[in-house]
Length: 155
Image (cartoon, rainbow, N blue to C red; front, side):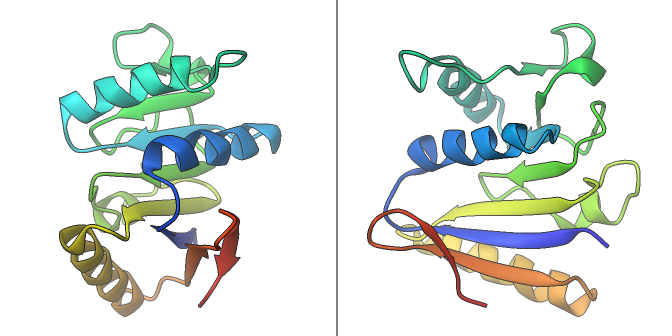
């Protein structure tokens, strides 16, 4: 069964934390799917991955970019998994349960929900997803940022 990790963003916004997590995933040789729920957010993430650092970018594509199965990072609004991702990142309260219930959509190794700890609605939505996934029998881990921005496993 896919590992499910919840990342509680407290010290850094998504725009700072996500590129580092994606870089680590690619360094492991993993393919990634990044799922959001709105086209506007997906466009913002697309821009972010091209411009988050002056000396670097993260190779990625989305539907319509041609050959989605070859993309190291695939951006999507849906449950598609054309690059056979090892890890899948969920942002903007994207729902994990339907993706994990479908073997064709689920990542091979890990699913990660990133949520903003300064947004009460995002925290509440993450708690609902945690309960739903725990009730479904998934192995869950909870990670929180330390004062220096490192991820520490809490549960």
